[in-house]
Length: 422
Ligand code: FIX
Ligand code: ZN
Image 1: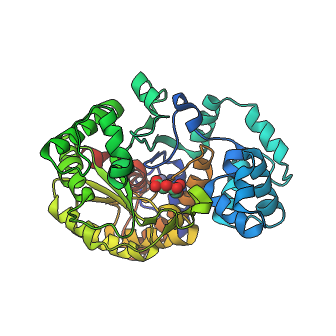
Image 2 (image 1 turned 90 degrees about the horizontal axis):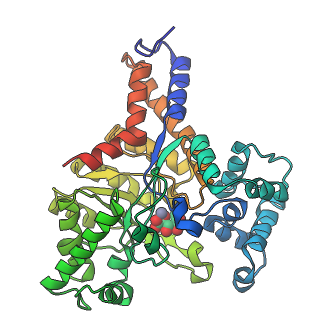
Image 3 (image 1 turned 30 degrees about the vertical axis):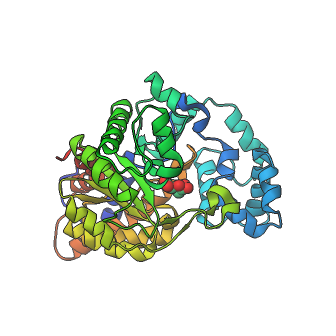
């Protein structure tokens, strides 16, 4: 019997070993929109939330004659019923977002062949959120998740003020979209209201110091794993506007001083169709010379990066080869589909070996951890098995414990080491 240290003998044993290692590995999910229980209604879960995920809202309009106005006037339960009827009953749920609901219900032990929405509702109404968190973390084999925490969101502030975020499996990420993308419209007044002496264009030394003070206060309060922003495809750096001043004089120095990496999620075109609300964002290819300039100009800063355009993915891998202060992570949003995850994962392993974080879930609804990780694990296992097989074919020996080591790094170790590195 192979105890883990003997070379794997053949292709069948390899395939089994990789699949088992990937499924046994507990995951650190480095980017979600989930919240721990003290955040109350911000933590979404249950069948009606699953069905009204914004990915499915975008799809239902394509299969129904309902107007935007009529849809948004419905209750959540009515929206869920419409989506269930149109996308699951009147059409087969083939899209990745639809398939995700089926996988999730099935993994939770519900009878998907019955197609009975009321049964699913009954299941969720019979459980508490705390119990359901345990169920989901166990089924998804996730050990910890990173939330998305907006310091400008008044719904979050009471929890941060209380100092009790409840469940230590939920970690913070300090999200800075409002500061970076909406400074004149929103952040400026908000900061003034809190007593920070900032000016409208963020031009003075004093204002920079004040924003740094704001960031430091939130870092103390949240203990975030990283600071983060989503950026449009036309993001440019260096920049002589507000973005450049926030980056150069506020975020980057604080990120360095407190050893809190800065995560950039680049390529989102917000509100391409505003009628779709949260479902209305699009994507486009970014000019990555700006990212190169940022990495080159700040070798002592650490950056986590994910991109929304398929066309950018290969170029990003090449940039990863040039800059060790870059950690590439996840297949974000429109990239989070099996065919593209497979392609990107293969590309990354070929160009960067095991020095990546292959996936995050971006789950907005707790239940989604189940399907997002089940679907991704399968693809990552298949690609890894193929890559180890090419080594075996060339006469290299691989052991089960080496595979477990590699998989452990991909699903959590690389993230932890990147956070700790100076
Ligand atoms: O900016 C983000 O973090 C995006 O992931 C979200 O805004 C987006 O709506 C989403 O849910 C993607 O999966
Ligand atoms: Zn997200």
